[in-house]
Length: 538
Image 1 (cartoon, rainbow, N blue to C red):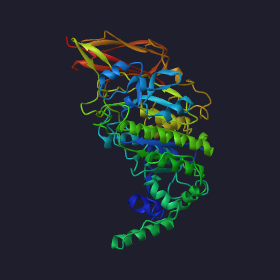
Image 2: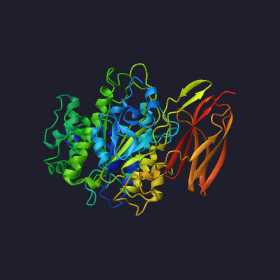
Image 3: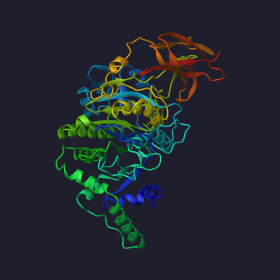
Image 4: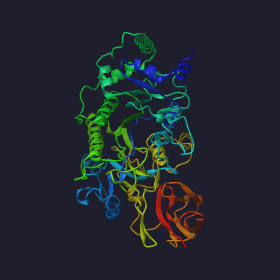
């Protein structure tokens, strides 16, 4: 049986833990979109992407807190809102601030090493943890089931015929590494897994120190020992990883008792050790805070504050370590969570599953700043009663973030990019120096920040009963106008084509839609704006 067929027909978890003498590793198939794009060795780059998964659905409104609409934010979640006086300020940007536990990321922002992308989601979001995670990993539409991941598809294109002729003289190292117990679809290629997984930091250090996890003296244990023996004879990555780790005996200081920091420490060690691995994935959980999100007497502490401390301290320590090791020019990282939380808190001092949430892109080479506006929280008066939307509407599709990193960090060309991403998504100005493109039409995030009162999309009348006219202003090029409900479902696409620069008006007939809040989303290249609209009863 050929090696490729053997790997395709065997359960990865059963084979790969044996590769590293108890170092629990799992291989990821090449079906992941990202992995496919990274696998064809057509691009000469030493760039590395580190993906941090925040499992459970993070409350983005209490992570990146809107100062400019603070009263609306506070009124929607009085029992968990962060006091405005405790919000961490961001140099040169007054509209938003960070959770008071995130001093590390505040420092990184002020040093120009952090970008914040507001209100990230996708059309018609799914609120199941499992399905939503698959959508983020595969970069598929919510109604489409895809067995490959975005990173896997990228790597499959960069490294053809993997794994049959790998490792080889030009690529001796794993294509991707995931640290953590969750097997990620993102690294799955079209046919086989494009990476390996280290189950936990303890296993990693057992491995590099030559500690072998014992097997029980049972038929099952004997079979496990045999599998380990066969795998160790056929798998060459074990020695490569161990040798890379051995080259870095000293690193910076990481916070103890922080699982994310422990994983990122390994990533920094392997990058400095010389691995050519392009993609690393790490994960940390605990974000499904339906209750007890904050301390009832002090909302700045509690479960969510502990999570914010974990993220901030781990990323800051990782950033400092990369700088100390002399490799910060090579690394960009991003965070994501499978969905956000509701605008309104519940009676149990928690939040329920919601639509959009901000994410971070970090590193020396990012374009620092805030992309997008504070979340749209509509508070229109309807028939004498205030109506507050219970979901943050999407400003940016998460696949635009992926497309931007592939295009501007890994230098993926336009044709390959569309194949990897399964569609054509807008690219955003997230990468600064060392960009693959000589010159970007948008020079920085500040170019996307609209002055107060600069409306790119408006509707009249608003409120409306049945129909309303939507007027939008485009700079030219591909322009889209979508109508969404408060659950993020796309109800209508009123414009989706290339326009000449100018002002245009289209009609929206709401038909049988019930009275309530709706959103008109405008997108013109990397520029977007969301307009809340209110339908009222006649």
